Length: 210
Image (cartoon, rainbow, N blue to C red; front, top):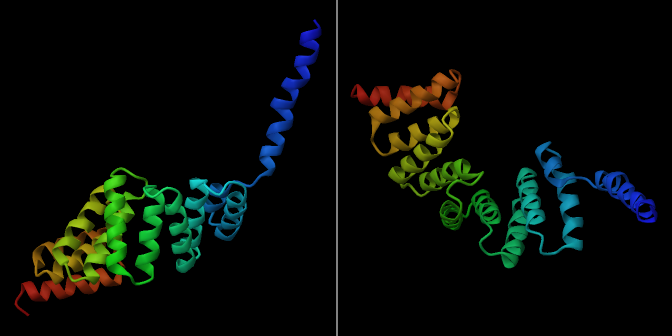
């Protein structure tokens, strides 16, 4: 009986008091998902003061900074995270994205390709292939862009703007019939998408010899 007498208060602490304290601590990932990027970043920075090797904190901090369009800072965070864990695919993707938006296309492409190898079924693989396509367009490697955009759309087929970019890549490669097909698919999803409307008109003229 004495043992039960002393054990019960311990269970009370575990089941009631500890959850209350844990609920008081903000969840950085949930804040990020709610679009509260500044708050999420603040929580992550506090976590990293306590646990400087915590990769989840580097990840959510990097995503939040990308959301805030603070690409220079996102790149610094990614570099710091990769010093802790060089092949954390989440941070590899953050570095690629930061480099892309900073206009460092070739470097960005290297990290996107690395992500695709490290995490071929990762949560951001669709976006990575889309951004790879944009890199290839900027590098005027239109057939490679076609492959990257097509892969992104195989994985996530309902984004009109991606179909339009695939149409553009095919148009620039001179594949006008396939470009028209991509533009048409974009317009089925979003009939008012201006870039697809203009692209369709251009390739129709080219197919007609105009």
